[in-house]
Length: 464
Ligand SMILES: Nc1ncnc2c1ncn2[C@@H]1O[C@H](COP(=O)(O)OP(=O)(O)OP(=O)(O)O)[C@@H](O)[C@H]1O
Image (tube, rainbow, N blue to C red):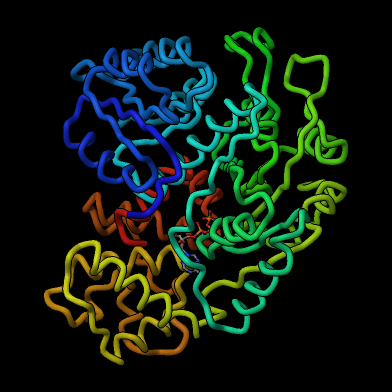
């Protein structure tokens, strides 16, 4: 049996199906997952054991959508243990609920139906955060084992060989690393590998997705705050820079850090100290920072977007992950890996990929990169009639089914207006937004009026 990185997770939701799904999914991270439809039960359990994470439904009463129940229980849970990480779940998402959740002390926010990969990532970060908070409060140096890497970083192309060699060289040093690449190219996976190779591997790697943090919360999220620093600051809160002390902080989508906060981050990194919002004295920190962005280098190099002195602090080593279309040699390897993995997961026979299907998949441009390939493999395994996969099992634009060398994604979107099917229209709109923004998820999500998380979920739903 593989070692579980965390101890206890409690899930509270009035829907039995959600409880079952969460229990099955989260068992891979936690030694114990307790589920209950009763929030009071969760609070009672806290008297017996300290959960690392509580996943809390925001709406209990039938038909309730305003999340007030959830916020009430959030307050009670944090009163009992201000260091537990609470991840709020709700079917009635929206930026306002997310902002309020974070302001009232939730660690993260996940909308239903969730994408398994994103929920796991949110819960893993939340668990690492509560551990680190407790350690920094108790000033103990107990070990927090890093989660074993669930996905190996695959690739045999010369470009990936370069990436792997850089990871081996830069990993064990304490150098800050900046990872560049389009969405879905594997930046987070590279960050995990760097951490795994480092002397900090027994401490936590915490993640802050700066593409998902509301603008007014950046400060408190990164640097922490003291009780009373602003209206909703009901207790001291350790920021992620401090919580990652001794370990690694992964700043995802660092290009989204607002200009006015960039000097504060620079000062913290230069002086190795953070001053929580409302505090007088700085706190020393020992953190290695790994950052990632999907911004093209020319935008990152523009002073109006990103302070160059901060950039130099972050990019002691730079690792560029090329898009999948520029390393097509890796496609068969990735396909085989994920097809086999999903066949095992869904209890299907070992899949066979005929040559013409493989050629078409290698010829496809994969604008969503490895993430899209992974989802396509999962979907194909689920949809296939037998062990032999056909091109129709893959959600590629029709033009891609012929093995032509460079399938341009932009050539395949049809106008939305003629088609009144809501589901298809949604898919087309999402495809258009993604293409318009060169698969920059943050920009496409903002144009569609969605959060990055809900765009990811919709992309998964449509197999994009
Ligand atoms: N080289 C690889 N080998 C195996 N799996 C990979 C590889 N690269 C990416 N993946 C898989 O693709 C998915 C996306 O990877 P990841 O989240 O690391 O990308 P990202 O560049 O950080 O994306 P984003 O910019 O959208 O946050 C994950 O499921 C990851 O496991």
